[in-house]
Image 1: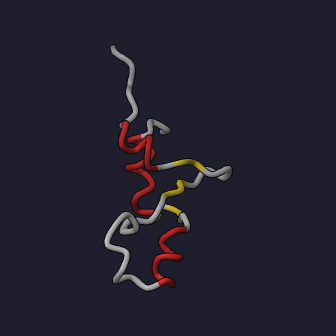
Image 2: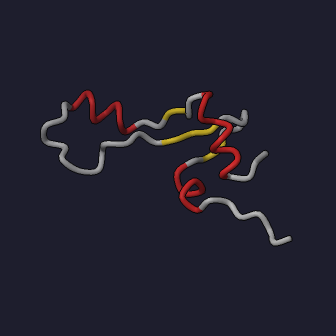
Length: 65
């Protein structure tokens, strides 16, 4: 059997926290920023955690479980 490979797209987008949760960045902050408010852009800057319902599929893509 060949080795199980991680999905490159997932590898670039997600990181594990110390407690085992998965961290992600917000979308919609790369361009067309003039119409977005300062408050909205600031909120999109910060990273957040992946929703619990998506965690299992991302862990499979990263070959964690």
